[in-house]
Image (tube, rainbow, N blue to C red):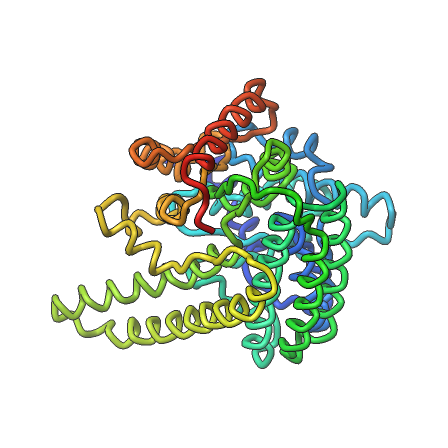
Length: 454
C-alpha cells in the first residue's frame, strides 16, 4: 500500500513536470546549452531573427555544480548541462541581484524517446532546479524525437514552418563550417590560423542568420558562406602532405562537445590526423526518419490485420514526417552540391542508406533505435569509403555505444581498419594519450598501405 510520503513525493514530481514541455516563449529569454559551439550560436541567431531573445550558455565552467548535484550514475552530458544551467543562474543572480527573475527565462533542453538516459535529463534537472529558491519558476522547454522535434506550441502558429526551415538551415550551415574547420586546420600555414578564422566566420554567419533567417533568404546566407569557404581555402598550406583520415561516430553530445571529450579532434590532429565527425543534421534527419519508419510499419501491420480504424492516422503521419524528411534531405543535398566545388568537404550520410547497410548482412536493426543504429552503419560506411581509422565517442556506461562497440569491433578486425573506443566521464583516464598514439600509429600504417579514397 502506498504511503502518504510516497503520495506526496509523487504529487511533487508531477507538479515539477508541469514546468517541462512546450510553452509559448513570448518575451522570455531562451537559454541554449552549448553542445556544438557553432550550431548553438547560429541557432540562437535564428531565434533572434524571429524576435526571440536567445543566449548560448557558457559551458564547462560549472562542472563543480554539475557533479555536486548529480550522483555519477547519470549520463555524463547530464552532469555537464546541469552544471551549465546552475552556473548561469548563479552568475545571473550575482549580476542582477534582486532584479533576477527566473520566470523570464526558458531553458531549452530537448529529449529523445527510447531507453537512452537522454530522455530523463530534463525531468531530473527539473527536480534539481526546483530545489533552489525561485528556480522552480524557470521553465524547461523540451522538444522530443517522438514527434520529430516539432516546434508546435513554441512560437505563433503562422511562424512555425518558417522557423523550422530557418532552424534546420542554421544547423546545416554549422555542419559545413565544422567540416571546413576540420578540412583546413590540419594543413594550416601557421598554428591557430584556422581557429581564429572560424571564430570570426561564426560571428559573420550569426549576423547573416539574424538578418535573413526569418525572411528565409537562404541564398544570401549561402553566398556569404561561399566567400568564407573561399577564404578558408587560402589558409591551407599546399606543401603539407595529405594525412590519414579518421571518422568519428558515437553519442551526439560527447562527440561534439570539445570540453566533454577533452578536445579529441584536436588531439587526433596533433598526432597527424585529418578528422571528419558525424554531423548534427544526421541526428536531426533521423528524428524525422524514425517516426516515418514507425508510421509505415504500423500502417502495414494494421492493413495486414484488417484493423482499418487507425489507417488514416498513419497515412497522415507518413505524409507529415515524409515531407519533413524530404525537405531536409533535399535542402542538405542542394547546399552540399553548391559548396563542394569550392573545397572538398566530406559528404553527409543519408539515413535510409545507413539502414540499408545494416540490412545487407543483418548486422543490426533500426527497430532497436538509439544512436547505435546510426553509429554501426556509419562505421561500416566510413570503412567502405576508405577512411584509415574510426573512433567511437561516448559517455562511460552508455548502452547504445557499448552495443556499437560489441558489434563493430570484430567487423573492423576482419576489415583491417583501426578502431578505438573513447568513453568519457568527468575524470581524466591515465592511458588515454597512449591509446590515441597507438591508434594513430595503426591509422598511419593503414594509410601507407591503402592510401585514402576521399
